Length: 185
Image (tube, rainbow, N blue to C red):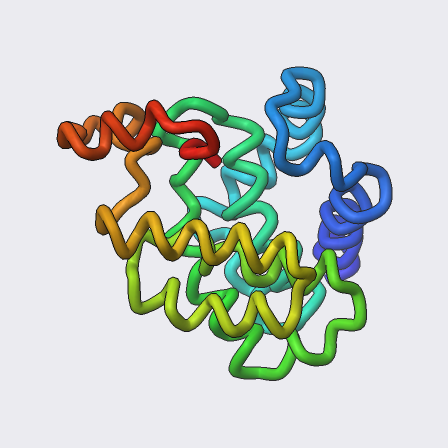
């Protein structure tokens, strides 16, 4: 158990203490490489289900959400693997809401990352659940991003910027959308 707590702390410390918010959402090859170097093995273990027990308590659950939802986006940027943990992260995010972990979390940044699997979902019903949570538990800028994500799913039923990576054929409307400023997030 001590090993698990240490690993959980390492994940949370790396993301919320040692990293800067500006690093979280921009393409930065150096930050991606650092994330890969430090957490590739742990992320693979999370993806394989080896770390599912972490999801039984709040701190471990949040670390697991990062390993499943955010770290793959850094480690495997611009590949289909970037989304490999989404389906495993989503139930953890919903569990955090149901168990009151989200509401009990005093730090806005941590609440935001609890909710990110909802924003990343290509299910409109999930997006509709997410929006009021982002409005309540995050800042206005993040809530606006959540709204934009929901609007894209409402319009297309998926995120067109993922199509090529996931081997999906884009419609003419999706291709035109991808040419508009701000369409890729």
